Image (tube, rainbow, N blue to C red; front, side, top):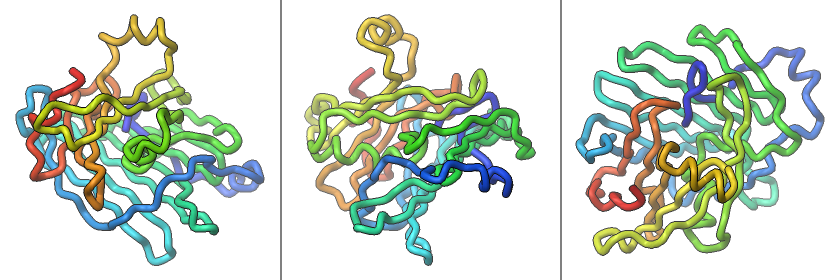
Length: 263
């Protein structure tokens, strides 16, 4: 969900890369299985809570048993981001493991900015130009914890109160392909209108001192959930891409002014 030199997430790898990949290449993250599948209509709002475009989140169960997440959000006639992830059930039925992630962003004129791809099965991630030519590539650590796309599932243990903190990594292409350490925590309850919602705030793991110094410079990253809904995701706040406009993506039917906390 973050831009890179080109945009967000990795690339279809060659047979040579497949042969040379580590034998144990896989994500170590175990994500909860969705309780419901389908398309969730949503809207994109600017920082002043004005609706500026359509959005949607799709949870799809594929014929092979895999789960696909697809999301699209943006400003009508302007910048937008499209992200996908594919996950496979773990044999013991404990949840889902990430197989791949991809993110593409488009600028204000609709021009493609590049492709960020992550392949957990080959432990490789790359940044490509709009034509798909790889410009930078890195190896993922063994049993990686990279999660750019499926944050709506990754944060559910925080929503339920099962954990107090979630640590993970985000792949970025800005300034070259690299991994950033991130962490998420459950925020205090919102105001009276949104008291049933749970806000999860997340950002780079900078340490207490650096976080305080950088707090006014970093974007405000949040997800909101309704723990009583079948599909708990309600909204999220994120830049459309690195250094791009900050937007609020909200499930249709939820007033955007409910989510004004944390500014």
